Picture 1 (tube, rainbow, N blue to C red):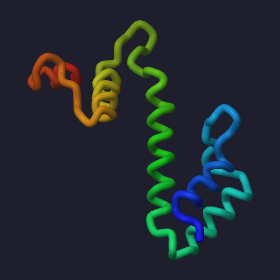
Picture 2 (cartoon, rainbow, N blue to C red):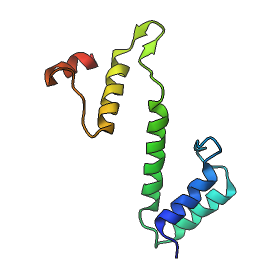
Picture 3 (cartoon, rainbow, N blue to C red):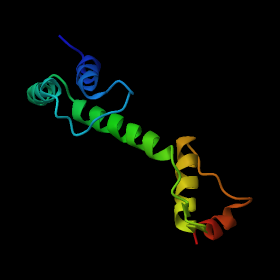
Length: 108
């Protein structure tokens, strides 16, 4: 009997390319059949949630590689604030500027 982790690895092995990028939604017939089989298999509770979490973590990693703060010569304050919050959340805390009261100036 395969574990949920083994099934998840099997699905991901068909959607990750040579550059270790995930092509989603998958067009690979093997990945699709594994997902359908796992969906029908009641012995794999939580597999869909695990796959969703893996894809969310992957997307956040890809999106965090580039910054959206600058638009031409203009600094987009909302984007800057959002990026700072995301970076802080990745460390299980939100980084405040100097004091908690200054977070408003960051987000305005």
